[in-house]
Length: 436
Ligand SMILES: Nc1nc2c(ncn2[C@@H]2O[C@H](COP(=O)(O)OP(=O)(O)OP(=O)(O)O)[C@@H](O)[C@H]2O)c(=O)[nH]1
Image (cartoon, rainbow, N blue to C red; front, side, top):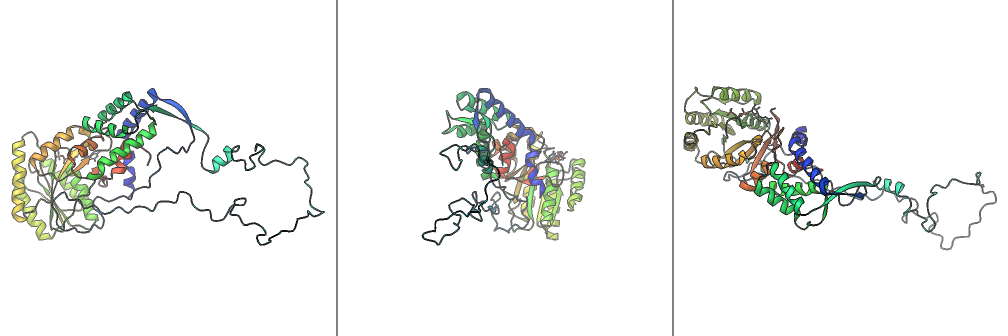
C-alpha cells in the first residue's frame, strides 16, 4: 500500500518546523568540522518496517478481552543485511588469491625467456604514480581511489554544537512550540542529554536522538483497534464536532470491509441533518449500510435498532456515530450514557471499543478533549485526524506521554485510504525529519 510511504510528505509541516528549528539551534553556536562523507557516527539506516493495515488483512480472532487490550500482530523483522558480504571470488593480489603453482615445494628459478618482449615505451605509465616509497600497497596515498571504492566521498564538513544548558533550553522551547507540551518536552530533552552533556552534536545526530526518544514514548501506545470474536463488535465513536468522526468511520468501514468484515453504521447524531447526510455519503463510498432515524429522534433508540439489525444481519462490526456538542456537557453525557445502557441490554459487554477522534490541528486542546471525554465515556483508544498539513503533530507525543491511551490510527487526508495504522518509528522519523 503506497500510502504508508507518504507519512513523511504528509507530515511535512510538523517535520519541517522541527528540522528548521534544530538547524537554527545547531548553527547558532556550532562550529564547522571536517568529516568523511560516511562518518561512523552518522545514524545507521534502519530497515523499512513492514506496513500494517488498520484492520489487519487477516487478523486472528483473539479471545474476548477487555476493551483496550492490544491485538497487535507481530511485525515480521526483516533479516538484517550482511553489512560486509563475503566476496564471491578472491581478489587478485589478496592473500586468499590462489598462487599460480601452489604444489611445487621448491620452485625452479625462473629464467626469463630470451625473447621476452621489451617494453616499447622506455618510460612506462605508472598506474599509481603517487605511491610513496615504503607504502607499496599505496594504502595511505590513494584516498581518492580506495575511498571511493569503500563508498567514502570527498571530505565534507558538518556543523556541531556543544550540548550545554543554553542549547538544552533552546531544544526544550522548540519542542514546546511543536505542541509536545511542557512536561513531555522537558522529559524528552533530559533523556536526549543524558550522558551527552558537553559533547558536540550535529543536527542529524540530534534528529536521530529525538526520533529515538519519540519512538520510545509512542511504542507502547501504537495498537491497532482490537478485534473480538463477538458479533457484532460494537464501536462507539465519540469526539467534538468537526474532529473527523464521520470521515474516520467511513475510512474504517472501508478498510474493515476490504478485510472481509460485514459492517453496519449507525448515524447517532440525529440532531444534525448534515451530519447524517455526510455519513450516508461515506457509507456509500465504503459500500456499508448506514442506519438513520428521523431528525431529532432519540439516538439511544437508533442504537437499539442498529443493534437489532446488526445481530439479524450477522454483522461483524457496528460503528455508532455520536453527537459532539460539548457546549452542553450534561446533555451529551446523558445521551452517551443512555446509548450505552440500551446497547448493554442486548450485549452486556458492549460497547467493545469507545474511540475518541481528535483533530491534530487543535494542538494542545486535544489534551483537554481527552480529559473531558474520559469523564463522558469510557474511552478505550484514540484516532488522531488531520496530521497532514499541521505543524502540531507533536501533540501526539504529549498525548501518549500523558494518557497512555492506545492510538489505533491516524488520519492523513480526506480520501478514503487516508487512514493509517500508527507506526511509532515511522511517525518519529516523519515528525523529526530523521533519516529512515
Ligand atoms: N486533511 C484532513 N482532513 C480531514 C481528515 N479527517 C477529516 N477531515 C476533514 O475534516 C472535516 C470534518 O470531518 P467530519 O468527519 O465531518 O467531522 P465530524 O467529527 O464528523 O464532524 P460533525 O459531522 O460536524 O460532527 C471534513 O472536511 C473532513 O474532510 C484528515 O485526516 N485530514
